[in-house]
Length: 366
Image 1: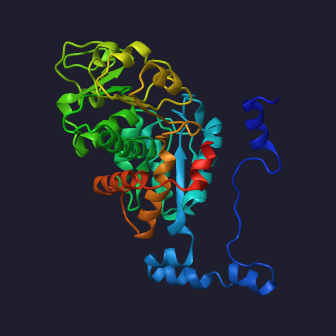
Image 2 (image 1 turned 30 degrees about the vertical axis):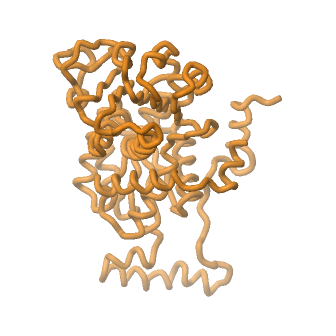
């Protein structure tokens, strides 16, 4: 029996290598249609766009074209593997955009030594695209890059690792609180992981009603508390709290919610046992969750557990959000994806998850 690893390699290499290609959207099978597609016919839309730049979306693919851009510095659970090795992931992202939202994608893997070099490269490509999806860029560079590109560009710029994750996790939290009859304003939330995704999740959850005084963030050095020096930066400092707690194990005692955006296996059954009644556990590390769902359910029968993996029920994964978020932004020709739009996506996704699951979906998990 073939290993999954080998099957994945064969999947990517069989037939035409890779997962995406470019095809004409108009007939180009006669001399006349070729003359319309290129010279001399192509001059007509060029002249119209030159007179009115807004017509670019009428005569070209720009209004339905998104760039998925990376430098390969923080790819999935693989780390800094570089832009070339990141290409299969970016192609895969393009497949999801097309499959779930009909959006065309060019994946761009950029060799850039500084954030400014990356920013200027993407900025120069603005005329080509209707939106920019930043992907797998390590912190803190990802914060600098997104902030600056949002200032310079007049098209939506969205770092999915941050905001896509935050939208899905916050929607899941709303519904988990509803199921467990917990008040979002009173729950105690513990994060493990203080990277881009975790920080964005914490911000959006606070915006949704979580009391920042009831939120504790941990990283590889333990609890992020006021006065800590080791492993700190300005972004982590935003979530530093006054507390005597120093470890994840200590922080989880009596906690209502665990949000894991860190490494596999970090949460022990004993930690889960110490949490409050009806604990909510989002073990979102990939490919190995912070705690195995089966272990969690054997440890406590009142646990609500979700992971970032598609092969387990209760999936908290960005694919539930980013295709439709960009679809909406492109359709209204938005110039940004702001916090109000993100909160609207949270509400819509939470409501959708409460609807009856179609047989076509539920049978996939049989």
